[in-house]
Amino acid sequence: MNRGSGILLHITSLPSRHAIGDLGAGARAFVDFLAKAKQSLWQVLPLNPTDGAHGNSPYSSISAFAGNALLISPELLVEDGLLRPEDIQPTRPGGARTDYRTAALEKWPLLSRAYDRFRSTGWKRSEYGRFSALNAAWLEDYALFVALKNRFDGSAWNDWPHDFRNRDENSLLDAKSMLAADIDRAKFFQFLFFAQWASLKERCGARGIRLIGDVPIYVNYDSADVWTHGHIFKLAPDGKPAFVAGVPPDYFSETGQLWGNPVYDWDALAESGYRWWIDRLAHNLGLFDFVRLDHFRGFVGYWEVSAGEKTAVNGRWVKAPADDFFGALLAEFPAFPLIAEDLGVITPDVRDVMEKHGIPGMRVLLFAFTEDNPKHPYLPRNYVKNCVAYTGTHDNNTARGWFANEALPEERHRLFSCLGREIPEEAVPRELVRLVMGSVADAAVVPMQDILGLGEDGRMNRPAVPHGNWEWRLLTDQFAPPLADSLAALTEECGRSPRKP
Image (cartoon, rainbow, N blue to C red; front, side, top):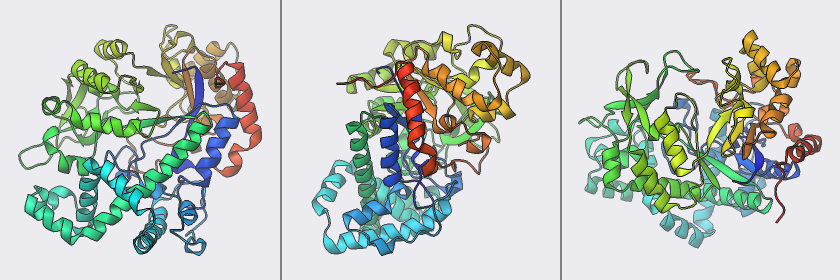
């Protein structure tokens, strides 16, 4: 990774005419803003389908492969002739918060209308066929899963009738025939999503912007992945999770985080040569230039909690076959464009794996002031070259929100000592951005909220808080040319401007 910088901003946070950001005009405008600001990186959160039952978290999905159809741009469908301009009548103008419920009520009928026009006109039929064939390994089971889930009123797959729950071959063949139209519709929505994403990625590449994607380590129990590949998870005889994932008590929660996802059966994964994971990473490396592996330490040792526990306190660490796993990945992907989310309790064995395979980790500046330690690894003067430096992540408060509402007096004092002077609250975001941009880290990535200097109202997520997250949005007038010019000047000053070919 060459020396550069970029912005962390999820697709849902983009401006649009609708209740949710999408892959249309707002995304294109943001790419142009990044280029004008001399940024070379754009980091997004997972692109998979979300669900209101799980707080609309992009880290909680029914598929590790599928794209979120709510991110499809209706305006681009008009350009394609699949919708007419008069079809698009937003339920309400796109505002400062993402409204997932309104987005679903608005977009699903539009997508269905686009599918009907596709069926009647044969629009890009051959391209759709190629997409379906190339992605059949995950797409067929995903589309069947979605169709069955709708057929059984949204119930979890383990509550379906026995033959469907246990994937009886004849019953699935009958379902594929009976639900053929629903299956085809689900596949077509995926075709639209990935076509629009490919167009956006091409625009990024043409402007020298490289995309950083995010791959959650775990998948939902109620997902196409667990329903299809149950043998690679630790499930009880009744098909329910025997153990679930989480993390022990840490900075974010005194009782830890109980995620509830089923944990992997690493012995079963090893027997297959880690095929499911290799397929998953190959899929994501086709979408992004770099992939951040969320909760990296879970690939070395993971926190396993017996199903039924109310918190993550009574868990235990279990060793994973990290050397064998990453050796298999390196054989499959020699370039290995991975970034480790190595936050939290990181033990020497995790560092050993990262160093052995040359995987860069993360440095989060907001964590640097929690203790009086001049050798703290998150202090900019202690950064290493092979890392990605952040002011904060999607799980943190904004820089200004942290200073105003969370930082203890001694933490503020340590910040002032690091800067060499006292500064007012409104100057904190700018100074923290300057610190990470001026560091030796190969990459510096800053949440858009900190570029804008926003307070706590701009926070994206509060870990362990189930509702009200993932809703912050960028307004069109917030990334105007003057901001791009000032960011470009700082980028040049810190030696992070994109290299000319």
